[in-house]
Image 1 (spheres, rainbow, N blue to C red):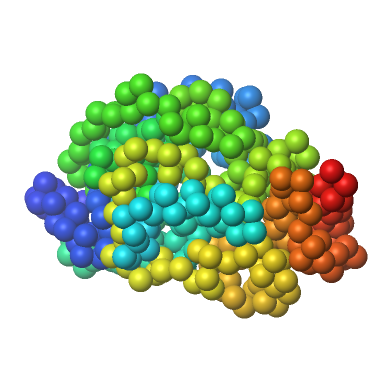
Image 2: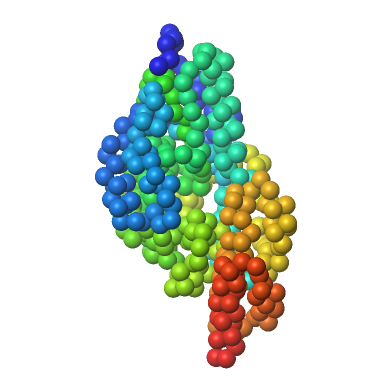
Length: 366
């Protein structure tokens, strides 16, 4: 444990001010006791709701025990970083819903349209830790941004950054849920902040709107049905029965967030990093499906999307292109685009392209 003499309350206040200077929207401090979360985490894992995300179970209960993950940890500095692009229109939620209504449009989750948040948030948290070190000398710490077995929402909830919504994401009254979370585990015995009251009430908008009914009850998410899981985490074939429910969503899903009343208060980012790149807010499915692997890697350099690779990118797009065969109409341009990938080297891509073409053939015969 760090041994020094310092006004810890003043230091905590200063740390929060430095964080805001670095572009972080809010910072709060929690202790490390997440024992109330352990039964729910274990039950969720036992039910297999984490799907192929083996890393969720690999570390056992270490995820709920910060001091086991990083020995000596006494406190967690939890941070919020807003990500709506600067100058986002007031009616952004309605705009997002309209995109879902155009089957030729490619819908990418808002958070992934700009720079990879892992790099942006980690950099700022590291700068914050370095600044603390300059002020007080060496101390024990480790920075996390969705990069290790960390219960981010539980810690943020405990720290008072917000409360866990029924969709399992963190909510706050002044910014909804359109933000990233990051943490600094530290051995500094800083004063802790109080949790805040939950404000979901009887609302179930997020549960009702979920296209795949992945939110199986308040605060319960079956990741195996979640479109974010299916388009990002799942490495193999997307279950056939779920493909039509993906619509034109090719990377992630924001439906539970756009439906949430609290997101009328979502804040635009103060950072340019989350500005849209490569026209991902208005690109067409055909346009993106035409990208070669070289195009994919070059255009999405520095993007979180690049992590899934070109093969799964094409898989997701093929499903969306198949779903564009709606209202008894086959789309000749889409069929032509799909046929160009019929002999793709990847069996995964070929399978999903064949399914998509079958959707168009069926509709052409209706």
